[in-house]
Amino acid sequence: MKEVNIYTDGSCSGNPGPGGWCCILTYGQAEKKISGGARETTNNRMELQAVIEGIKALKEKCAVKVYLDSKYVADPFLKKWIYAWHKAGWIKTQGEPVKNADLWKTLFELSLIHEVTFEYIKGHSGHKYNEECDKEAKKQAELFK
Image 1: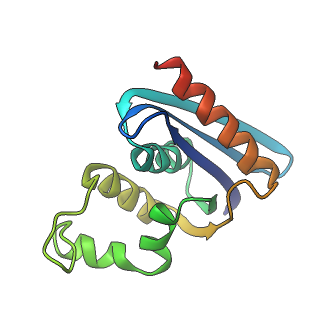
Image 2: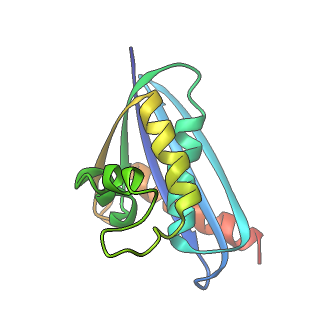
Image 3: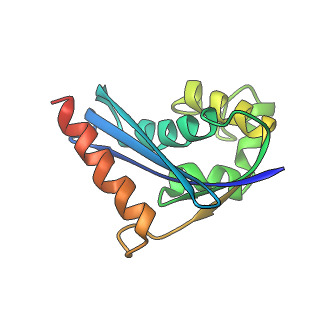
């Protein structure tokens, strides 16, 4: 099984407001950058969209390691909350609906196709791909102003 790394970031100018996302996939020496955005969105939606688009770009089942600076996206997987949300019909333990459930459902389904693990990295700490994703996500957000 191929081992792919995906680096992601999302950005929003205003929250809500115009937003952008970026992901960089690496496999061996190969790199692929994908980015996009939306006119009216939130930072959390852009963070989720970046991961979704990265995983959707895979053409076969892979072992995927997602590196991201968003605890909003990482924690539900790292702390296993996503499984409880799925089991409860996308309702949190407090009885509230999960925000951005449409994107969480998509990401959850994609995570079942591949062997996906998440690693939180501190943002703006000089990580090459994280910095590149941050810059591109902000650029994409500007295009939607």
